[in-house]
Image 1: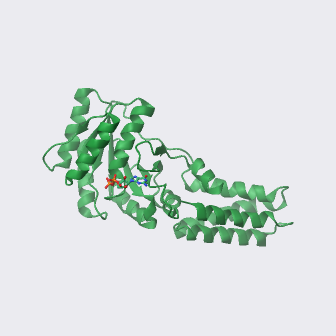
Image 2: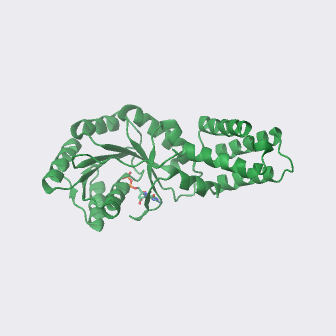
Length: 295
Ligand code: GDP
């Protein structure tokens, strides 16, 4: 992911650096090339426009043209702007004052929601010394419950599930169980659908009302591009979630979703997942991703 974008931005900046004297015409051409590279990478049109307008404004207002090392200064401005659209700083997940912390995981079917629930349990256990319980509220697909149980076994954390197809009850009882076992975190894996539809929203809204989660994370498959961004936007308008999880960041697609989602949805990206293995998860650092993209 991002290889094509990286090389196009690099070549645009190299051309600029090669000029003996940089003029505002050169700057305008480079900025245009960067905008084209962003659009080729499937970045949302408004985000690409704002990104490049901001760069142009900062370059013009900062004396870059007359500075000793204009190419380097220009690169710094592009980097700062990229960090900005990715969310600026790391945004952590909430911790309840009185345990257990309840974390609700939502997302479309196939987005990587169940895998992420397992990864998050593992992450909180190994990195933060927490004692999570997983709640199997994706009650319609027995395969999903079994998948969660297998993940939980691998990590060594308990799973709460029931026979009945009642996701609200699963969520509520998992929270009670956490309290009685003195477990400090409940991670609720909900049912995904092929599209964000009313039924999916209603179900998540009901669980939200029943257990009042401290954190709602929306999982999106970064390989699905602008569809992922639109889905997150629609879901957020109804559910008002706290953060986004980007999965399949190891894929070889163009990466536009990752670069657009923060600005379009106006919610922070909190984690990114880079593979199928349980340890392929990391907190999301805007500066690190910007560095990876810009080399
Ligand atoms: P759910 O339907 O949203 O619960 O999705 P799953 O957790 O079952 O994941 C769907 C598929 O995507 C599975 O085959 C996972 O192994 C795979 N998957 C999940 N996260 C990642 C990731 O970060 N990278 C890659 N390459 N595959 C992933």
